[in-house]
Image (tube, rainbow, N blue to C red; front, side, top):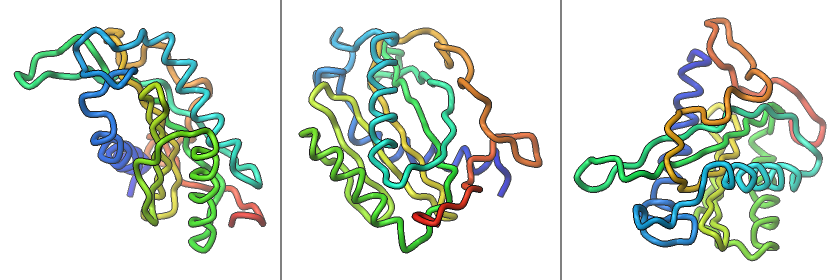
Amino acid sequence: MSGRTRLRVAGAVAALLLGPVLAGCGSSGAAAGDGSAQAADLARGRLQELVDGTTSALTPAVRFADDAFRAVPHENARRDNDGTAQLTLRRYVLTKVSEANRPRLLEQVRAYWTGRGWTLTENSAFAAGARTSDGTGVTVTVGVPGNVTVAATARVKDPGATEPFGPAPSPLPTGPDGGPDTLPRFTDPGWS
């Protein structure tokens, strides 16, 4: 599987997991398109906090790489752009997490989220998800080869650009095919 294909699979999994959580919800939990979506620049800081906090809850610490913030316009039932978009920040864990340690990783993030009073929205052997009081969502998913992705998402006013804040802060690792390679490559005695 190429790095580009792995990235698409990881993104599709995150979208499938977050879709039901965020469908029809604005930043305050109100219906999308009713003017309740927040400005993308305000959501940017919130999403960064969610991803940073979730990752920092992992003990021992893990290595990771962040993708760019990405905005996907939302359509209403008539397939018209309703003026909102889903803004997402994905963080790819590059530390290898053994199959035996994956339940512990997911339990650590669930404990962090519930300790902040967030509502758990996903609780399976391969994923954990939560929604904050402001309607922002965060998930952690474990892919088939063991890749771990943290994704935070908010409904925002459509910023009119796919990467409204520019490219990723540092380039994602590149695979042999030139595409992003987000599979874990670093070992750690506490995780690998």
